[in-house]
Amino acid sequence: MLDAFGAWTQETLSQHSTSLKHLCDILSGKNTRLLIVGGAGSLYVNSEHTIQVMDGADFPDIFKPLALNMAKALEELRTRKDIKWTYISPAGDFQVDGIKTGKYILGGEELILNSKGESVISYADYAVAMIDEAVNGTHIQERISVVAQ
Image (cartoon, rainbow, N blue to C red; front, side, top):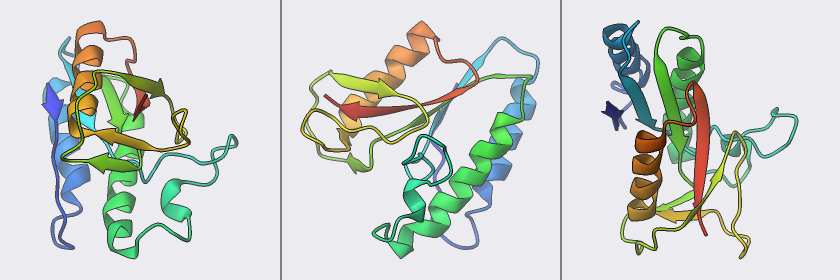
């Protein structure tokens, strides 16, 4: 199952947690996997995992409520040991109209950069990474991240 839920208004932001909890409750104890389209704001920028992308001075204020709510949903998800979930965070620059190369770099909890020093990925290449994880299932109960090669 793929969860690509999105809410942007102050009134609906809490649904990131409530909708994910609902899906988890439905899948509890089942063999069905849950892959979640995550956010980049909660990725860490240090190896100690104490500073997140959204903590940075250059992180746009307009996206902070969304990042905070998505991070909260991720933390709640981490407590679920009764489902097979994978949370996939995109690069910092998630490009709707970017080209599909079919190539990406897989990371973990920290914001990663490509060989050009960029944190960018197209929706198309993110989709390739999502499908690869759906097929391979190598990151159960983990958050992973992807960046264009």
